[in-house]
Length: 342
Image 1 (cartoon, rainbow, N blue to C red):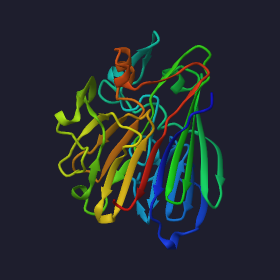
Image 2 (image 1 turned 180 degrees about the vertical axis):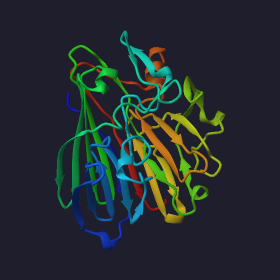
Image 3 (image 1 turned 60 degrees about the vertical axis):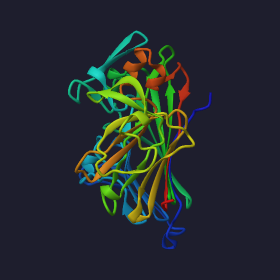
């Protein structure tokens, strides 16, 4: 079985002529943390990644504008508070910090009240495998093993490896991942999501427009899904037609996204549009728009919040849990594209 990749692509529809045909690769050690920072420029797009800080692509500058919430100092990249953290193998919350799968119970340290949130890979050092730079693009390949002797394996004891290939090009940044189950006996149940922290641009929240072409909202109780899928027309969270984020304060899970129907964020005063589209594996989307903050999050996920526990309850479709047989691989694809407002 061929490795099946997830790709998240930011593709530009407009580039300034001043940036055309320029490319540069810079690698340096941050003096405070000694972490390696890999920075690549292609045309008007500059992106920076730190493998040792959770493989976080923490900065994307497009047309001289930073798109992502910044860490303050490099030391703060580690974790889930800035840039583009990777959420794996349990995106978002796990009820009571535990679940059971194939007769085995997995326990995690509670870090969100009684629950566990955001997985095991965002604050650990990934291994930098290679950096390949050409005039067209820069590819950064990182990997992370789940093997005996690591804390992440103690918590999720299934032998496997996740590879992440980040590609930066003019007007585009892509993530491609491959999950390889190297266990000879255990199935691998996982979910994967990205948690990008987008900054509001000119006009702020009132001038930020959101379209989410989902079919359902996942009913929630104390920030955890009940398992019920409610048709969007029966809710106050229907965003199938564009709506301003002014007064739209949510932290909710949408369901029913399709590959040919992208989620769209528009910043009209910047004449900037970001499109989020995905392969069929990514039916779930978390929208997080807290009040009085200069940022918001649009989180494509392969599964629901608390997916493992929903799956155990028999809610296989609602959970979206990805299951990899012994010796096999799995993946999906997500695309962010940005250009002028349409």
